[in-house]
Length: 393
Image 1 (cartoon, rainbow, N blue to C red):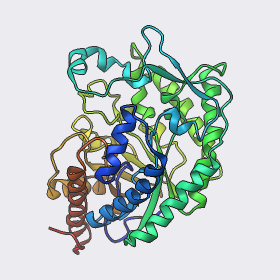
Image 2 (cartoon, rainbow, N blue to C red):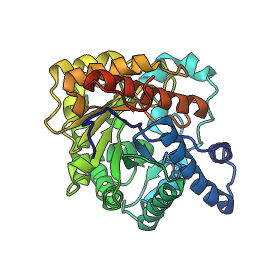
Image 3 (cartoon, rainbow, N blue to C red):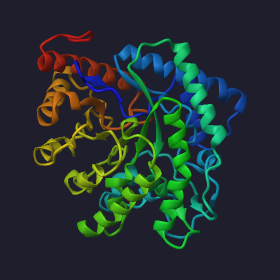
C-alpha cells in the first residue's frame, strides 16, 4: 500500500454511481422490476470504465471500481451467489427487514422517518437458514477480470486500485441468524466463508478494503441501547471474527473502513469514536478509514491527541462528506488534512471521504466533491512539503 511520501495521496470510500443508464437499472432493481441480464452485463462493464475515468479526471490517486459490479448489493440476490445458506421469509408482525430499519434514532425521530420519501421496505427478512459456505469463486473471478479489463480500457493514470468487501459483522446486519446456535458461531462461519473473497482480491494485486460500519453503527440498532462496556464486548467479538477472516493476508494490503451509516438523518445516537477506536486499531489492517467531515463526527479529530496511531499504519480521514450536497471548499479540505497530518504525521495520512458517494449524493455533486478533495490535498501538500502539485488552486 502506497504512502504519502512526498505528497498527500487521495482516495475515497468505495461506492460511486455509474452513468445514467446504469443508475436507471439500479433504481429498477431497487423498486422490484426485473432486469434483462443481456442489457445489464454490457452496462456494468461500461459503467466501471466510466467511474475509473471520472476518478482519474477528478485527481484521485487510489481508485476503486465504484462497486459498480455489486448490483443488488446487500441482498440475497447478490450474496446468494457467493454464500450458501441464505434465504428470505415473510416478515412476522413487528419485525424489520434488516437491522438498520429498527433503531433508537428511528424511534426518537419517528415523524422525520415517516415523512421522508424513502423507498418502501421489502416485505421479507433475509436470513441464514443453513450452513454458510463460500460458493462465489466464479463470481469474484468475473469481478476481478472485469476490473482489470476496465482499467486497461480506461487507460487512466492512478497510483493504486482497491476493491471493497463487507466484514463478517456487517454481513450479519443484512442476514439474520436462524440456523447457528449462537451469534458467535454464525460470525465465525461468515468469516470462514468470506475470507476466500478477501484472499482472491489480494492475490489479484488489488488493495482489499473491508467495509465495516457495524463496528460503531450496530450500537444504535440494539433497542434499547446497551451499556458502553457491554457493547464493547459485543464489538470485540466481531473484531476477532474480522481478524480470523484476515489470517494470512499481509496487513499492508488491507484497509479497514468504518462509518456510522450512509443515510441522511440526524445521527444523534451515533456511538462516539472514542469508545471503539482501540478496537478498530486491533484489526489486522495497514490503513484505517474513518469519518472526519460529517458534522456529527468532525470534532473527533481530538481523539488522535490521546490515541497513538500504531507505527507503520495509515489513517484515511474523510475530509469530504457524503452527508451533504454542499461541495467543500478546497481550503477547508486542506485545513482538515493538515490537522490530521500534524497529529499522526504527514506520511501517515491519505485524504479520503466519509463514506461512499454512490446513491448518497447526485453524481454531479459527487464528482465535484472528489475534485475538491484532490485540490485540497494539493494545497495541503504545498504547506506540508513546501512544493506544489498538479491540481493546486
